Length: 397
Image (cartoon, rainbow, N blue to C red; front, side, top):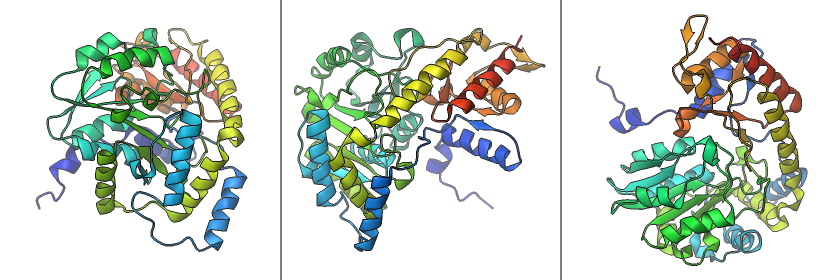
């Protein structure tokens, strides 16, 4: 019988972060003592005041379909949040609420990218960016960075990547997977290039409240390009609400309308209870959830302290998010009991098989000489994970 699966589905790569998480779950189901550092998910519970808001929303019978771009109450709260926390102004018609920031980004790509259009992606990039671009028929243009430059691009690299086919620039700040956070001066240097050309700039700011170095700088605050900036955000990371699936974007009006039209044919409006809860979260502001950032900072420093004891591993100090993205090129070409390590995938599988620690290969993020380790877990597990990784890597010859 011929295959019923479309070429589109066959060409779509599996999310490597989800793959590694799946492998870790399968090993745990077999009774293995696996430490999973593969998923980008806070280990905190949703704060009680938000759970209470959801209970009230249920009791008040918020159980009906919502408008496709989000309830007016929530869109107004998002408008106020952008003005209060980020320093730029939009109106409710420019807001689209989605089932997670991932859907927001996919909506933008489908709404703006035609086959053959180029989308500039600084490496490392979040794992789904490249697959989204390819799914829409776009051409990813990768701009390579390294640990030596703190995984940030320069204005010269940006300019070299631009062509007459460039439709979008897409990045996350703070970055998943590197944790790098751009300063205002660094962003300003990129803005000087952006304003010379006519393409969209998509700024994924889902980790804005987990920035250890400064208040996060939104690209939309640069007025000379603000009419072309699309800001993507959500509640998953900062508010520990991953399972609530609530994201949002602000965009130029024509882009917002196109995103809403696309969403209307796929999922329609986001969950009613999640939207009511999000109103409470955004109106209250970040003061009640910043304790999580303080804990992540302590974990970052603890994990770096223990990973730095591994000979050959190269580390930087990420400014945000909750990932370490070490350079592991020292170990490539080496072997473990006859098992040769050719790439980051091989190293992650070795660490999983021999150390029972799940990590994510950097190749999934466009950086083949790195691996991603999430420190969104307890101090004890981070110390133990570093010990196990060291024990295995020390045996490579």
